[in-house]
Length: 241
Image 1: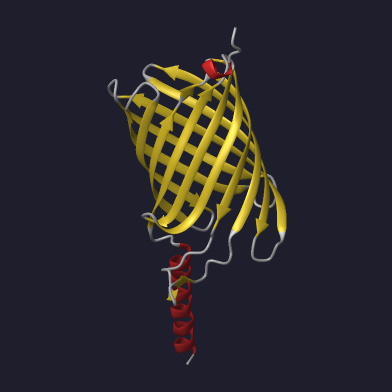
Image 2 (image 1 turned 90 degrees about the vertical axis):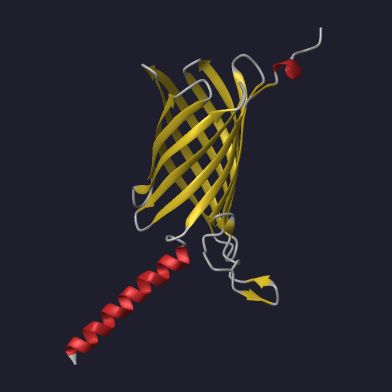
């Protein structure tokens, strides 16, 4: 009898673990679609624009929308300071979209977040390798839309990125970024990324890559498709003579 009970407990544990994996979407290959822009408005100033749409599956099972902007001060060609704001809308649940009379169920635990961030970027080059170090502090104002409860969180992030030109058109891009919580458990997450990029024009590039997003209790595999478009708006902001 004791062996039988032990076997039941083991089966229940395995079943619970698999169920949790299905609920979080850990076993699914998800996708992130991203846009980034640096819009120069003066010799030393530019505006950062960004939009990301994230899914648990390939363009299915919505996870998150992220909209971010900021003002950049270009200290010199290798150093940039930024003050910015982001809005993030998140559905942390994962379902296979059970249907009832045409309506999607289980989409009632959305989380809204308003975020302020301060950032500093340093760039350097070693042989043909281009390195970028990004340091970021975030003040996160998070609200559970189902309960109305809210919380203020603080986080630090560091990303090291390396770009290797292959030709004038093609390049490789790699980065690793760690997230450190400034309350409770220190480790937040780690993101490791590798991509192939193409320079479409002088101001437009694209990247297709793979992201491993590691949390303390789960991991996600994501396809990333990114568009980078930089504009020069200085002519618009110059005073007419």
